[in-house]
Image 1 (tube, rainbow, N blue to C red):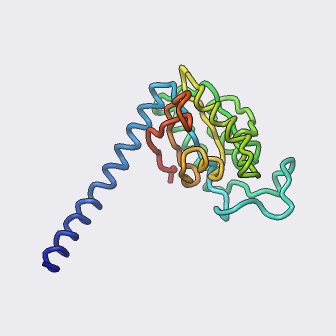
Image 2: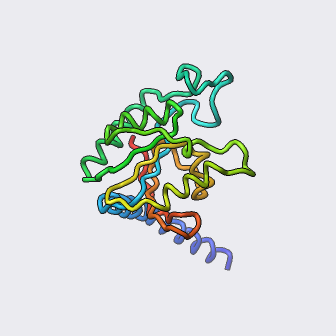
Length: 195
C-alpha cells in the first residue's frame, strides 16, 4: 500500500509540475487579453530596487530620492520592458498613477505609456487600524470604467491589503473592477516581471 501511494504521489507531483507552467502561461494570456480589451486595472509593483525587501533606509525623505531605495539597472530595464510590452500588445493606457516614492515614479515614467500623476492612495497606510489610503485605492480601482486601462504603480505593502498577495518587483496584477463588491476588484491574472 505504501509503495502504491508513493508511486501515485510521484505521478500526481509530475503532472502538477508539468501543468503549472501551462497554467501560469494561461493566466498571463488572460491578463494581457483583459488589458488589451480595456476597462481593467494594471496594478504594478515597482521595478527591482535592492535590497528588495523591507522599507527605505534610515533618513528616508519623500523630497529627496538620494535617501530612498531606488531602481537599479535591472529595475530601470524592467520598467522600459513593461512599457514596450504594453505598446506591443496594443494596451491603451488612459491613466497612469504612481506612489510619489521615487522607485515607483521612476518605474511609471520609464514605462513611457502616458503622463504620470502622483497619488498618496498608492502609499501603504502607516496605521493598520485607519486604512484611509486603502479605502481611496479601493474606490480608485472599483470605479474605473475605461475605456482603456488604468495603470497603478505602487508597493508590495499597498497591494497586499487590497488583494491579499505581494507580487514580485515589476510584476503586473490585472484587475477587473467590481464596484460595490469587496475588495472592489477581481484578479484576472498575473504577468511575470520582465527578465
